Amino acid sequence: MSDKQVSEMSFEEAMAQLEQVVTQLERGDVPLDQSITLYERGAALKERCDAKLKEAEEKVAAITLDAGGQPTGAKPVDGL
Image 1: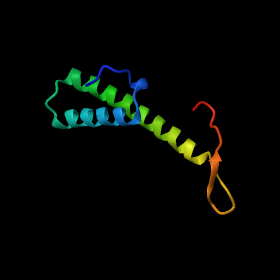
Image 2: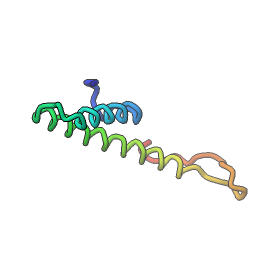
Image 3: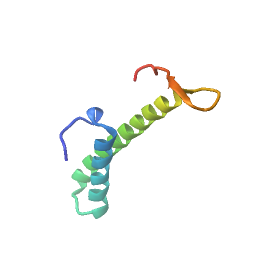
């Protein structure tokens, strides 16, 4: 697993690591202390994925459409 900070990960990186965490936890062969650490990392990775999805949804929602339903451009979204 990467030592990269969760807050610096792309959606794809966070999702891949979250899948690894879930696989390890499902196997059930990890000591309790390590399971707790994995669970905490998994929770942080899930939050990162949720945040990145929300950002994407906001960008999509900011696309303006003309009367024919065609995209005419995008409005800037604060903080993105």
